[in-house]
Amino acid sequence: MAVDMSLSILIVDDYKTMLRIIRNLLKQLGFHNVDEATDGAEALNKLRTKNYDLIISDWNMEPMTGYELLKEVRADDMLKSLPFIMVTAESKTDNVIAAKKAGVNNYIVKPFNAATLKAKLSSVLGEF
Image 1 (tube, one colour):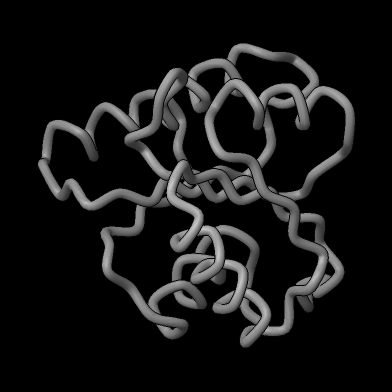
Image 2 (cartoon, one colour):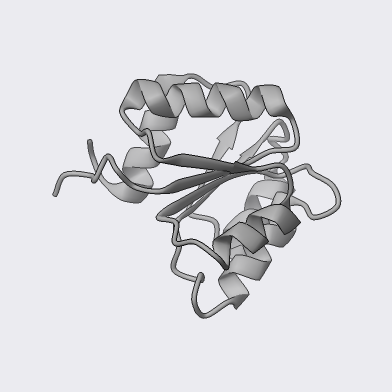
């Protein structure tokens, strides 16, 4: 089944440049319905007021990290089935294991390119 390219995607990162990079990579892949938040708390507010089809979140943010956001999303009955991809500069095995246990759908280590993002999105959403 083809992936709906009009999916609503929320990208979360406290670094504006990274938000712009991810937005541009998504645009290259054909996704244009992209919203952004600069930390987990802002993302959670947006998730509770608008329907999204996918979250792509950085791990390291203040005051609420991507890991804390993931745990909040998975604990919320309205949001718990939402696909969640974690992005981080940390490739520590402990972090990957913790994110998997918390229910992350996939994990991307920075830096990454459009091909890597497409492969991770395909594993979560299906081929496109």
